[in-house]
Amino acid sequence: MSERYTKHKRIALYGRLLDKYDWRLQVIVAIEEMAELSQELTTVLRHDGVIDKGRIVEELADCYIMYEQLGMIFGVQEEEFTEMMNKKMEWVEVLTQK
Ligand SMILES: [Mg+2]
Image 1 (cartoon, rainbow, N blue to C red):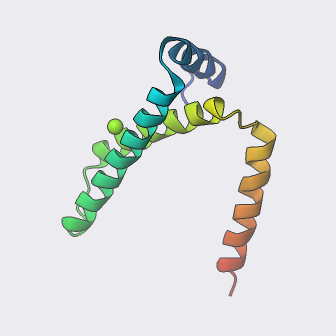
Image 2: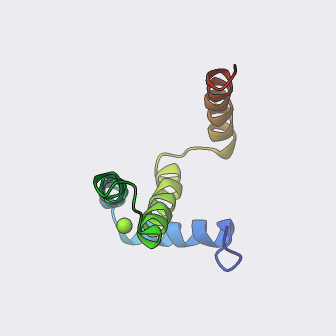
């Protein structure tokens, strides 16, 4: 992740956003950003796999920013997220065996 915007700095900036804007607005923005990523992905499929990588990177970054904010909004602790990720990855491991 960016050296310029460390996680510590990003969290501080999200805190300022959440002081300025109602959390419900940020949830709406998160939904919109996920929809924008979905639209880029459907565009790729509609154009037979031809990608505009810049657009994909942009929408992934937008979603990542909103993912981090959603974690703050809903009070998700790093440890509980890591634990859930481990469970999910165990399933991926099972799926990819054979
Ligand atoms: Mg976007």
